[in-house]
Length: 150
Image (cartoon, rainbow, N blue to C red; front, top):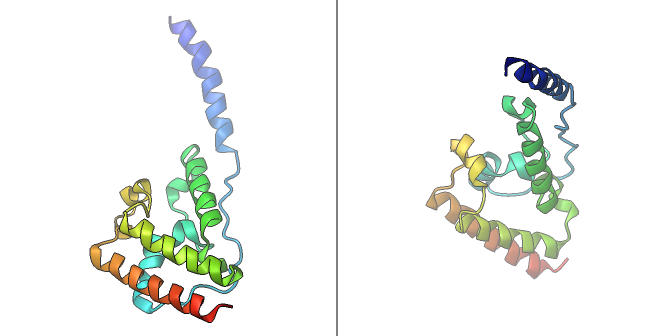
């Protein structure tokens, strides 16, 4: 039995050591023009949304740990693909208005931030007043954008 364990443990150890050499894909691309929001809303968005939905990701120490790094990189990549506040002005007016509606909806339903992010980032939890501030701003800004029609 001891010999069989060694036959498995050695290759498994080599695989784990090799994984450590795999480069992490943690990047923060350049930011174009960012989001214009009142300071209280911008503060909430920064602490609850920007790590996944901007190019200003704060990569925690555990984002260098194999397996975890892949999961975190995937979440950030998906988040940026859905909404990236760092490239906000690259969206059309109607895309921005639609995204603002979704921001309020996801915050209201407590679908964002993701539960696994909230688990490790207590400051990202949105209380009722933070959700109300986000929704009030997003509704006002979406109406302004649609009214401007550009």
